[in-house]
Length: 136
Image (cartoon, rainbow, N blue to C red):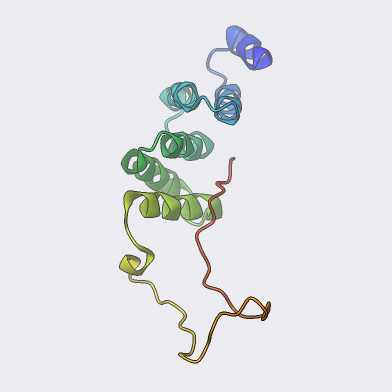
């Protein structure tokens, strides 16, 4: 953390240092401070994809999914096919209370005869949304 603070003392507009400082703060379970760091980065460079995604991740940690969705949407406007942003946006939608079936996407259905059995390790299981977010 001290290294980022030193770098920012020399060059306060160093967006890369602000973003990495935010990631470090999130790792230290200090999402409010991380959010402030991302906001400073975005004040300097409003179209910074990494700052937008990381800001959204911090908002998710703060249980503010609506604001997180807005940040993911801005990031996806810059890079529409960014897998980590798409995945994390889905998590934010789920956290907001939108069930997966409400997204109107086709779902794979298993035959009615399929039964789950602990003794059948090859049995297909319903997938769930990954809880781990990608950090950029």
